[in-house]
Length: 328
Image (cartoon, rainbow, N blue to C red):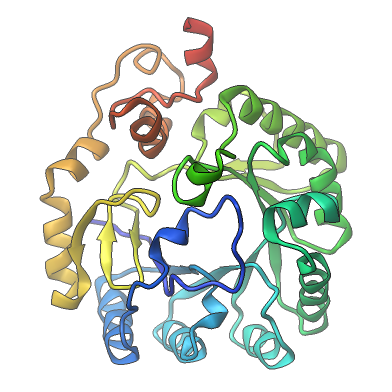
């Protein structure tokens, strides 16, 4: 199997309490020790993994984070990290620049009022202070907006702000109804997601600015732009998610633990690929509109987590697909 990337939640702890956080479920979960983490890094390098994406929680809260990053880079793998940026200091910024770690920084609004409604009072200034440090130490970054009911109408201004503060690109990802997003009922509707995607694409086109859409492959049916990249691959064997305790998950938004890497990465991967749920996800039975869709071999039915959370089934189609709305 050709695993290209591992998305690793290195900690469930966070210094913020965002109203839409899916990872709040991992708070209090004991993370792998440094020894286990270093062994894991060596094993995935030997296996042929090329890239590690670190996320959380807030990764900067892990005290041995620099040792983990150093090991990843020393083993020849590339590394990016998702962060709220409010915990960044000069020492960490210098380290990230030296080890060429690419950052995805959370910017959930084009205005301080929207951002702080989602991420808490006083954090806008901390975020902007972090951006200043990244630029000072030459750390490359993109912004990420988690699209919810409170910010879906701001994607145009969000793109303009991302360009203004020096981000290499801007990303959006629809919030799923899980964790605090479910508790606070802030996940967007299908119509709100479709609106945000269209406006996002128009803004990137107008500026000639790079944009990326995560976890919504049907976006390819809504926009056709040389500036927009739409991620895919969650229904393939190229990407796997892992929680802080070393559990390989069906998806980091779903509470399905398939295997644990503490038994050895190769053993865990064998267990993962033999799991019936994983087989079901990777080999979906496509009904209409998926069967006749031009994206069928790329999208493969879209986000199975969204299907499970909204329909109670892993089966396609993605309930937020615009073709589904036309059929309905």
